[in-house]
Length: 220
Ligand code: SAM
Image (tube, rainbow, N blue to C red; front, side, top):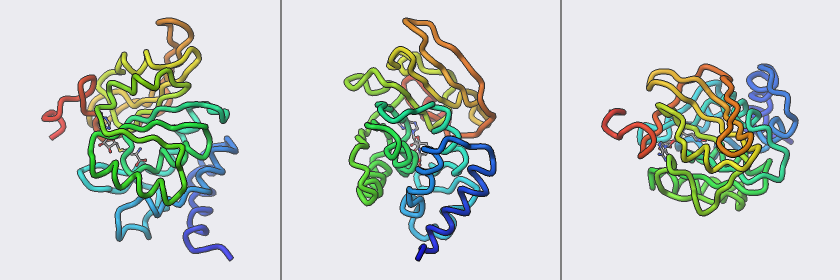
């Protein structure tokens, strides 16, 4: 018998994911598999499958399910990739990616969030997610290059450090713009310093704070 959460998850996928045009079967399966209620703040489990972002503490959020699915699909993953995520937050996006690819490297700047994310990821046996507490605007140099990079916080401009950590053919999906609204962009490294640039969607993320992002005080 399906649990209430599994039923809510199936409904979420039908209404918010496939119902809005996400059609990559591996993305759909990952959204069906990952127990999102394990990644939300305690006491908010009953809202875990709703159509909006939720607060996770420290003025940060777990993104809306559709945005997670849309960004994952936009990375054009096939299964063998090494992916970098900037902004671990709750760990949910990393758990979705971990179902699809070989290795996920994820950087979070807030210790407490990284600790909670690790717990939820371990519950899901997502041992192929490697976490680090650091300024993700600098990427993860020791592990570069990456086949795909996803940034789940909004940058004033695309950090060159991230573009440079893409393998040839690699894709970077990142919200770029002001703090009130951004455009979700995809940069594909063609070769050397040649990139293809595409605008995917209007969006609104919390700020990417760091050396190559917003200064801390500007987001207060
Ligand atoms: N991917 C997350 C999830 O699945 O829950 C949602 C992330 S939340 C919208 C954005 C996250 O980016 C926050 O946890 C924030 O602390 C983090 N962040 C902001 N600037 C960062 C930086 N320079 N390096 C690493 N993490 C950063």
